Image (cartoon, rainbow, N blue to C red):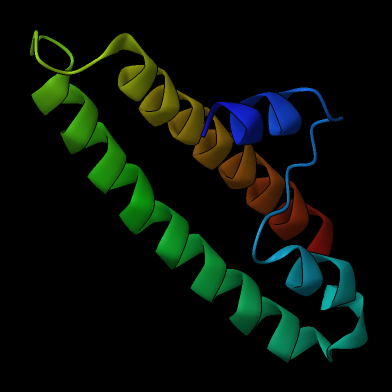
Length: 95
């Protein structure tokens, strides 16, 4: 366990998002399908954001939740907000 922890922490950070392939290839879709794909991502991100907000509120004052656990929840929330900003900019550019 410790060897794995230090092996991973000693390497360059590589954050891979499951839908990076979708983002990279979005321009390969016809405009209407792009909009549909973006709408699905937007809906799923909105659902995730609601879940994270609820989870953070529920756990932020719970002494049994480790600080590292809360840090991960907050990190995910920041990522969700960044994805929402990206979606907003895409939609603005599509108009």
